Length: 229
Image (tube, rainbow, N blue to C red; front, side, top):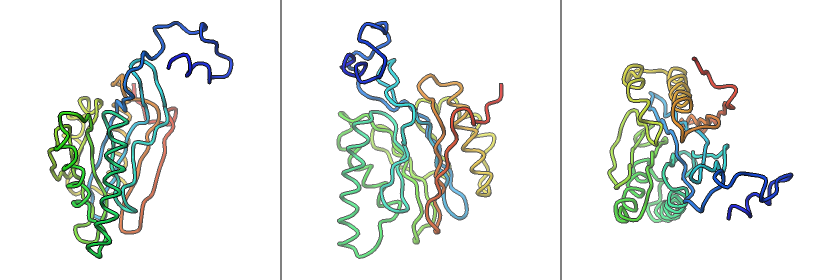
């Protein structure tokens, strides 16, 4: 696998890179830092963009904010294969449910669909998820679905390996009455902090602001992050 990957890179030969730098067939992992915050008119979600296979960085610009419906997203951490497969299944189930029930799926519907699968296959899956979005019934909502299949609504949620560096920062800076701009600032600084400190997080910061007006996507490249030494 490693030789095939190297042969696809222009200017590299199989013997030009030390063997210990190459993947030995490890599972693709999103490593990850995920942050999601509710505010009065919707939610702000963000994630880093580093995907790795052991010590090999397979993709440094991954989009870990995956749309489930037009206004519901899932933030993925853990095994890339597991989280992609579960997301595809939930998208399929929700599309059927919307036809049967005659209404758009709510964020809670999506979160419970993820929870059912992650819990049922908890011994096989490595999938830590944050489901967030906006619906006309409940407004902006954030649900955390960690490994094992628990599901809980939280006004602010963090996940992934980088979250261990963020508990103090989020606990100190988060307020229930934050504006959209303040939530964006908090989420950006949280992801930046994790990219700086966590070896499994990196790349750029991808953000989505989800309100009744739709989804606004933002991107900060690595050299644009507000890093403070």
